[in-house]
Length: 319
Image (cartoon, one colour):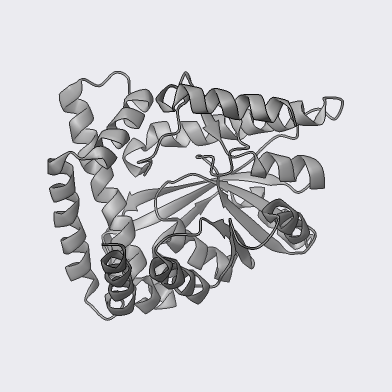
């Protein structure tokens, strides 16, 4: 089964760029509805997360929202599979940017900027655009299994101009990231709305306790690199822009620089304060575009195994 999955991903990345994008988009649309109708564990987890974002919705409303969410999630995959075959003019036509001034002055000074991303919109399309229009892009990626999937994934992202640091098998990842922040100009893009390291920070998210990555704030506090929230959401295209993009959908970047916490606070508290600050900014974007939040994993504390989480907290307290 794992080998079949690897072959399926390999085939999608290898042939997706050669297929008409409307055909791929239509296939992903149908696949999204099939998965949604089956109402498996991933869809149920998505609905549990979205229920925290939109507590005002009843069961029927939440189901409608999760259907839109699955469609945007599968749209992301369809766009990723076809992205290597897109011309630059098409990619550029699919992207708009808000508050670029939160990033550009730092880049002009030759600095590395830490971009905090959530699982919102299409971050691969965003990365391809940023690598050409902003600065060299470095990012961290979970080492996927089976190996066939990871290798295709790596080839794909490197092919669109990204430098990838895997989360395992390459030594101390945080030290590598610190070294990146000392180079520039460039952007270090980190998907941070889910903790993959077991060293995360507990925050308030939509009125519930959640656990997110400590990396962006830790880098900002320890190196002085600017930390900028990057909300990436889908937008409907029309008219000349739609014709240039050859797609009904584009993405919008919204940059917001995170305030630097007071210097007189202890380091751990500065990281916590800065993390909560970026979570609040990203949370506002998710609340405005909940269907674009592709969170099919556990992120809220109440959904975690209580004994395992208690052991993790105790382990962190002793470090």
